Image 1 (cartoon, rainbow, N blue to C red):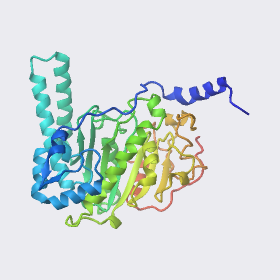
Image 2: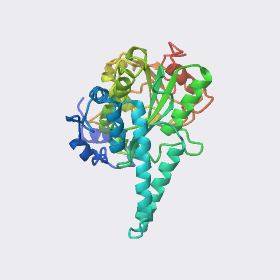
Image 3: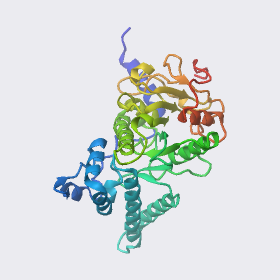
Image 4: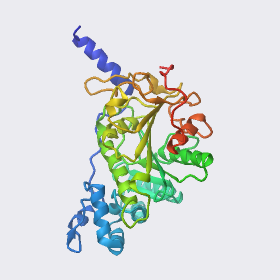
Length: 395
């Protein structure tokens, strides 16, 4: 039976309206990183530097290995905003660069806030942003990514990322930026809070485990539950960023002189929340072999209808709480809208994680829940199969 204009309109409305409280714009365009123009003209021993935005992580790792520590440290001093964002750069280098970049950005914002020639709204905005960066700096956790452009991108680390055998990366969903990175009072849905809770649960389960958790807000997320969240536009760009992140970690940790775990001993788990599961779905096919497990939770879909369509050897796990509002989002794809079948459905083929103790859309990693413990067990490779692999009876 063919579709009529009325039936097509109704279907599109069913797909889009549940999401439509935001704008229809795509990922925000970005001006060059601070210092990127000068970086492009700089030379080290006569050689051009890797492209600040487009260089492959292994290219970055090889270049900095050849450049040597003294040259690398000089690049950190001169171009901290670029060096802190270079996937493939040594981890100690990125951490040092981002400490310097945050300090410089705070000083710039403080000067703006004190400039009486500027409008009060401009000065007030600078004060708020500087205070936000100050709070993040007070965490004293290593910062893997700091990009002050637009709504900001940020990533911080729990544990010893340079040497951990088990590395987990939290991939967040809609509405996340640097401003919403850290936990709010009683809220566990931000990447900072989710990573902190996961790491705490890991340590409680296995105090001697060699583990690290990355809280990653490294892509432009849809700003709200609008048309952008109902399409894969943001996810496609985010998937490239996620693949570069993982490739960069592996390259940095397995450099010849690093003394870090090799590619074969590094086990990566992705924990993908809400729209973050769309990002992980787009990234799955080209992720490195080090990614052994992908956990999706509160997922609107992964852009496919079965796990085999992801074309990955990583194990796919899925959880959906009984009171999560994402259940009411249609699991279909049509004319570029929607993200496909629910990963917790039997037909999808994922290993399903019971999430009966999860409250709402953001409570999956709430401390002392069986669901959070299950996520930690998976990330530590302490479980081979879930309790239950059948259909999601709540759908």
